[in-house]
Amino acid sequence: MATRWGVIGTSNISHDFAVAMSTLPGTEHLITAVASKDKARSQEFAQQFDIPKAYDSYSLVATDPEVDVVYVGTLNEHHYSVSRLMLEHGKNVLCEEPFCQNTKQVQQLVELARSKNLFIMEAMWMFFTPAFTILREEINKGTIGEPLQIISSFGTPMSESLIQQRNSGGSILELAVFSVYMSQFLFGPEKPQIYGTCGQLTESGFDKDASVILKYSNGRISTFLSHFKVDLPNEATVFGTKGNIKLYDPFWSATKMSINGSDINIDVPETKKPTRYGNSVQLIYEIQEVRNCLLKGLNESSIVPWSLSIENAILVEDIRKKLGVTICK
Image (tube, rainbow, N blue to C red):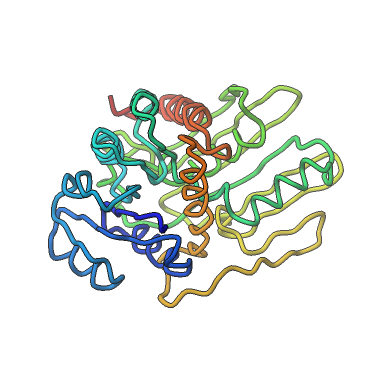
């Protein structure tokens, strides 16, 4: 029987989620409902992806008996409230990253899912991509020796007016989240020392760029940059005592990587419609993980467990505080 999905929000990432899912067998995954606060947008999205139900209320998805699990692809500030609504009505949840705006919200969602025996996972799709799987396997095999340094960046130019409007995010929460999570995935669960931070804030108190150094035990360091004003390489390299592994742009969904100087190209499925973000057809791997967990009766993924999302939320919040960012309460 197919896993029946509801999609909340008609954002670019929701579009790519639907495009990616269309490459998977319909006997395994179906989108049965979509909801947007704008009924016209919801209907347009439904028509584009042959979705039978288009709602103008999130509550209608929450109470739809033909929805097993909900993908939350709304703006960041709505992740918590929408995910909570779905859990309260007995729906399993895959919530787009970043999970929430602060640690307290993440912890509350986890506790609610636990109390209701429901599945919830942060959609950190980077962890499920073939490139990241290869990275983890090669590190575990000792191919680059002991990993001691991660250098990564994510920068994309944006108009000043748009930057000033980003009152629910900032460059750390929206861009550097991939670098933070990669650091914890490879060097955690230890909480690192935030050795250095530097950045500029918007008039409303959110970061429009940041340079950060995280210091872990045994000489391990992660250095990363995020920026809304300039293009950055958008690559990540892990350096070890015997070599290095590089994930090319975009490192969170890389289809090219190098291991000790030898390049590897990664094939991904072709899509019938173009995606709006680079290589985002790779969302299929987290989609498949959700179905596998549900079929096994699991409430959390072993790859992105609740504990990792909480650790990451704490670290992201601490970094933002160091930068002087206004934290959502």
